[in-house]
Amino acid sequence: MLSRLQLLVTRKLDGLLQGDYAGLLPGPGSEAGESREYRPGDDVRRMDWPVTARTTTPHVRRTVADRELETWLALDLSASLDFGTGQWLKREVVVAAAAAITHLTVRGGNRIGAVIGTGGGASAPARRWRGGSAPAGPGVLTRLPARSGRKEAQGLLRAVAGTAIQPGRGDLGALIEMLNRPPRRRGVAVVVSDFLAPAEQWARPMRKLRVRHDVLAIEVVDPRELELPDVGVLPVVDPESGELHEVQTADPRLRQRYAEAAAAQRATIAAALRGAGAAHLRLRTDRDWLLDMVRFVAAQRHARTRGTTR
Image 1 (cartoon, rainbow, N blue to C red):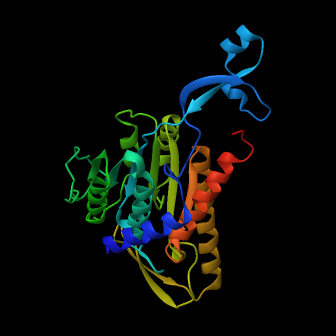
Image 2: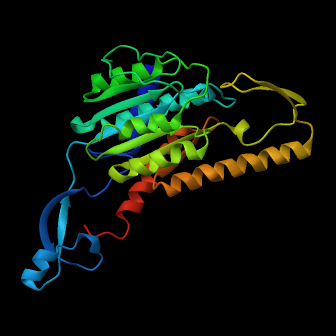
């Protein structure tokens, strides 16, 4: 299954997203380069004031994009991800998103690493993962070191796909915090989760992560988390606590209250991500996730290049 997924990602992304250093959050670079005279449309935040003072002519400092990008994935594989009523399980969408991001990252010698959460609790030290599986005990946070090369990237994806989901509540905040400690060079951080944990648990680590990195939050959603179908009595099990509830879905007022509560919850998640300065991509289990990702990348590129001087 993983091989078919990688083939699908490679064919579709290579056909729709061309260019050697393709990334989910492309930018002009952060390394200082040469100065040149200011032209209308240039970013005034890049003004080179020392040169401007010496020449009495406004100058801006060019920036040079790093030729080696380091990307880190924070993958939430807690029990709530082991659910899905659409074409995919939420867990499968997480693995698929990781495969797409990995494909976009490993070009040109770029490095990619990951931290994986299967529940709250103590963290595990970094392990060798080429061709192996990540440890998946209950309450384990696993770190897979950042490496370059397609073989290493394939090993990372096998480790992610081989991680077993464990019962119990996860700690998304602790998972994101693993990208903050130890401090890393500036790069891209991608958090993939359903973000069903309370926002106060993970919002602060997300804001802290944004200080040093470009942050992309991929929210995985199932349609039954947004609204209930009219199917009579529906047994519902909380995968993290194991609690069983019976819901009378024939009641239209109950379905309306559920939809309103779900919309409010998603609005809270979106507001917390926006407040953290993270780019936000929502993938659904009943949609073409790859097409949604391609559209997102295209929109990000357009937003970054619109109105800039080349």
